[in-house]
Image (tube, rainbow, N blue to C red; front, side, top):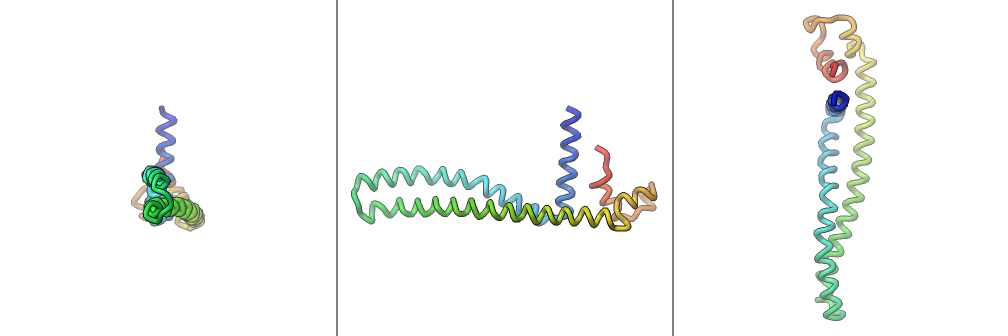
Length: 144
């Protein structure tokens, strides 16, 4: 149980770092992730009208009137599948952008002369530490 709480505290820190480095991209990632999760539901929802339409079309022979509803549902299913792939690619791209931004943010934080470790290492009271260092310390130096 203690180990789980420790891991959850690390997870909160990771989200804080990602939010600080790439907040807007994190929101975009979350929205696309939700949409990606809903697309299989849309696919299942469209499958029944496709099967019912195909059954009706086979029973009525070869005419445009019997094939038209099936064609529109099939196009919608194709659109959902294409959208699923596009969102997958977009999520991979956003993940790469987030990774680069977090890497740049952490590198800049560690190299900066007033980085968290430098600020906190030299002084120990909040009154003598610049405010930006304490904000960074909330993410980097907190003990769980």
